[in-house]
Length: 47
Image (tube, rainbow, N blue to C red; front, side):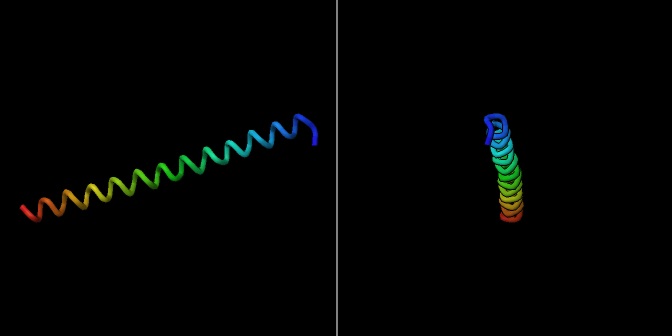
């Protein structure tokens, strides 16, 4: 494998990792938001 293709492969690998991280961040944020919404809804019902 040449130096150039090795560099390209590393770049695409790190890009894939970035995309996965971003995807998990989105899911995580969504989870937090829905949990918070549920908690505030419960608080309103409790009041």
